[in-house]
Amino acid sequence: MTPDHAPDELLTIGEMSRRTGVAVSALRYYESLDLIASVRTSGNQRRFPRHMLRRVSLIAVAKNLGVPLSDVQATFANVPLDRTPSHEDWQRASRAWKRQLEERRRGIERLELELTGCIGCGCLSMKACALLNPDDALAATGAGPRRLEGIPDE
Amino acid sequence: MTPDHAPDELLTIGEMSRRTGVAVSALRYYESLDLIASVRTSGNQRRFPRHMLRRVSLIAVAKNLGVPLSDVQATFANVPLDRTPSHEDWQRASRAWKRQLEERRRGIERLELELTGCIGCGCLSMKACALLNPDDALAATGAGPRRLEGIPDE
DNA sequence: ATAGAATCTCAAGTGCACTAGAGGTCAAGT
DNA sequence: ACTTGACCTCTAGTGCACTTGAGATTCTAT
Image (tube, each protein chain N blue to C red):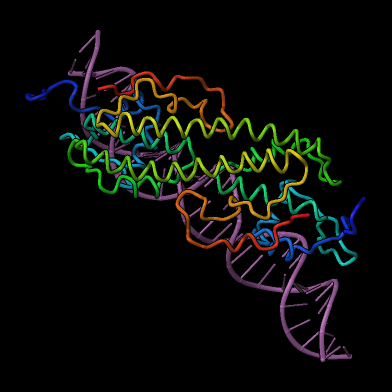
């Protein structure tokens, strides 16, 4: 059933960098934040388990989308660093990401609407624009909808 | 006494801050980048025309969505600072924004799909994941799809 | 007229997410 | 054995997007 692959194969930091497109220096930085982890050779060089490629790829995606590393950290909180994550581990993380990404996408959709319906027509009535509410940001701070007061309505 | 004043015409920096939720220091910073503009009183204090509220509100929205100020700057390139923008001015800017936001939204949608179809099921085959391509980022650098080589496919 | 809040400039500091460089070590090919 | 490139740690520097603080001035209300 199980195909012949070597899940315990270890990659150097340079291989990780080439295969993910993430700079070597960035990988070391991510390790310093415990976003990823490695084992060391007798000569103190890093060796990464293959499953770290997933983590790094996801970090890269998050970066492309402007998601701060602190959020990534939170998302990965229950995905183990020390062993290949199970399906359940990834599923849990996946659900958390999806919730956040959905919020973010909805924010963008609302902004598109605002632009079409308001700026597009020249009025920009932002009175009811939920986007000005910080809750719409990914990783909301819970600061509340204070900002809506006094937004120009023309 | 100011002899010629229509009370709602010009806003102080404090009023701008209160009505947009953007810090006074940030407003001064935006002005230094020519994202917004003001006139000065005889005593050298800033006074903002009402239409600057729109610009600031949009900058705030962009910030919430992680859009860099340089992109905002590009978007506003043809929206005049010195007079109330016309419908056409805003419409042109609106179209540019929409294009970028659509790309960004599509990127998020694709990531959601990846998470559902790949991480969700535990395989994370990112072989064909367009998100790892920097072109998907808002304000793409044009660096090309180099990153897709060697992404783990298990 | 004057107190006190708001504003001004300019310089420096903060936090994030890295990158660059110095100086040294390790590992693979010949 | 030797060479070369990849790797190591550590410190410092970069760019963005601001914030903070000092010291001075201006505006508004009593």
